[in-house]
Length: 451
Ligand SMILES: *[C@@H]1O[C@H](CO)[C@@H](O)[C@H](O)[C@H]1NC(C)=O
Ligand SMILES: *[C@@H]1O[C@H](CO)[C@@H](O)[C@H](O)[C@H]1NC(C)=O
Image (cartoon, rainbow, N blue to C red; front, side, top):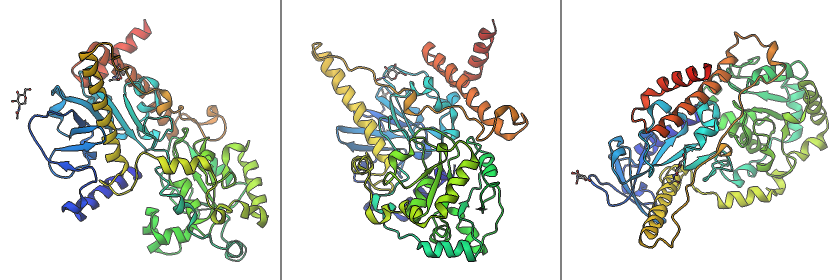
């Protein structure tokens, strides 16, 4: 949630700060209205529309132009080919129906799977013709979004180890830091951390499992996580618990990359494949590698007490990034700057969709003129473009966890959203025009199942 708000804030700031032409994206936008001779790309999530005057803008991309718009009235326009959704805001009962054969749905979602579990299911992912998600398998992978640059990972010097050890031995600092204020989450991380705390001292500052107060009020306000004072404060800890709010392959956030930036060792739980994105092969401790919180605590303690071993985890700060996969990826990723409107991932994906739509229209007209040219084959997503497993308890046996616990809302949400996906699939199939009938379709499907 917080990340989403952050993106929107970034937008607002950009709008306020740049009302003149100097801010216009490299992709030049021209404001227009009325009919379009170019394909239309419709932002179904209007709040993310990345152009700041009016409802529509002509965008010039690699393979041609499109009219980008947030005017939902354009849905029935025959030139409307691309429809872009922001994953967190995708609602099956507000989807653009009836779905025409030439409607190419495009999904943009870099946030947590728990924000909208309907996207974790195969039937949903197959509805999207173009995908930009945290999964490397998506068409326009956003996996490395939380990595600003390789330099950002390596440039900042860690607090010297002698100082970190002094803080631990003389100032009573724990070796392990936990800062989390979103407590009831799909990964159920607090249950595990609570157990881990039985075996190793952890300073916990956020609202979850809080056992320590920040030294002053000013710092309290810096819990926005991006503040320099906050980074300085957390950099004094040798290890950071970096547990994601939901578990899915390639879903990683700044929780993982912030400790690397400040020079602390992440103890990570989230994507099982996180190692693929690390600066080298020894810069992270993976919680999953340990059979119990106790075993993990024993390992952390051993590394904490062995200076030579600890420093191995920070070697990348001197030697730089040696993971060739990461280096190649950062060079070739499909967007560039963070700045909105200047090659950022949102406008870059908009152009990607525009290009795909133009490409297909060209291929179609070529085929119509000369049938020896093959007609373009359908393209759409699948489970591995963003599918995620059902939420489960983080520690212990599910049967030992009382059914009244808040945690259960997550699996319930997950399975309810699966029913929604099935109902939406059916609605598309029969050409339903009214998306708000979703719940009627769900009722029907349940009835049939019972019979
Ligand atoms: C756009 O085209 C539609 C038919 O394709 C027509 O009914 C409408 O009047 C046109 N609008 C403008 C502004 O030209
Ligand atoms: C878009 O995806 C759907 C599957 O949901 C598919 O039937 C359709 O052919 C795809 N369209 C294109 C243009 O590839």
